[in-house]
Length: 240
Image 1 (cartoon, rainbow, N blue to C red):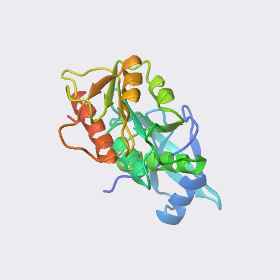
Image 2: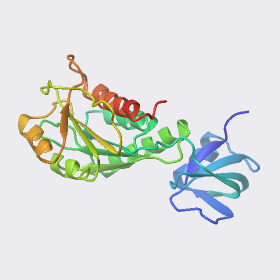
Image 3: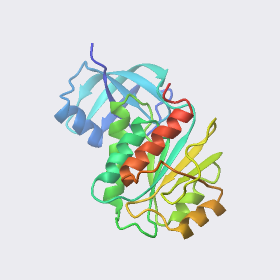
Image 4: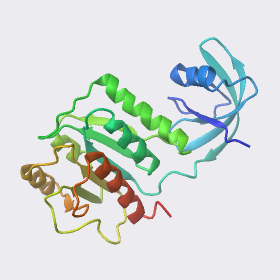
C-alpha cells in the first residue's frame, strides 16, 4: 500500500475537524496527483503533527478534507541543526536546500558575503521555501525548514547567537574537523563559491564561532554545505 500523499497548509489545525486545501498545494493535488474524493491524504501544519484526512469534496479552486486522526511526526530531528550557506550561482542553492531538508536541518539561512557573486529576490526566496516543502514531503518529515535571507554575513552569524555549537567551515583553517561528542543545538556555516576572507573568519570568531576543516581537498560550495549538514547530523546522532 502506497503512503498517502502529504500537503502543507499555512495555519494550525489543532481541534479542527475539516480543512481546506488551496493554492499551489491544491493545484498539485488535483492537476498532478489526480487526487479524488475519498482519497486518504496527510495534512501538515508545521507544528510537527500529522493529520490523517479523507477528501470529502473537490471544488474548482480548493478541496475540503475531513480530519480522521492526528499523530506526532516521528521523523523530525531531536536536535536543531541550522545551516547558514552563502548564496550560490544557478540552481545550486536549491540543491543545498533540498538535501539539507532531507538531512534534518531545522532552519536554513542564505546570505551575501565578500566573495559572493550570486543574487536573490523575493521570487527566488519563495522558490527556495517551496523546494524545502517538497523535500520535506518526499522524505516524510512533518515540518519544512524555513529559508531566510540575510543581506550580510554578520546578520547571518548573529541569527545563530543562541546556538550551543557554532561551526564555521573555511578552506584556510587547518586545525580540526567536526568536534567529537557534539551535542545540543548546532549552527554550521559554509561560504559561497568564492569562500571566505580572513577578515570574515575573524568576524565569525568574534561572534563565538569555531573554525572547522572539511579535509585536504577543496570541495565545491554545494558539496561543502551538504557535507557539513551530514557531519553535524551524524555527530548529533540524527542518522542512527
